[in-house]
Image (cartoon, rainbow, N blue to C red; front, top):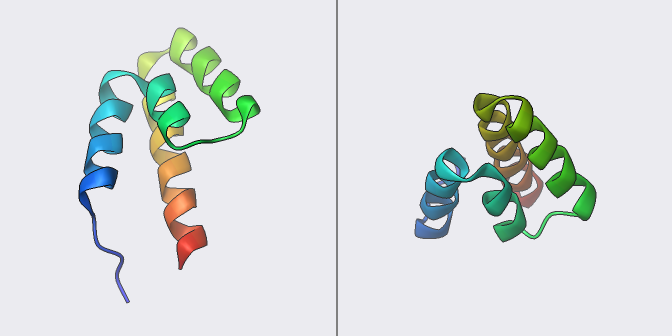
Length: 64
């Protein structure tokens, strides 16, 4: 069964690309994930984006 992309996920993906740490906060992740994402974003924007999208993927997998 494939999981569908809803409106909330689309918004989080868009925010993940523009402001990765804000997207992690919107997903209500633990403080450690937010701090890791901030550091990764400071080292390289793409690293923060990948981390935020990975956390979204991991969250979607836990719902299955």
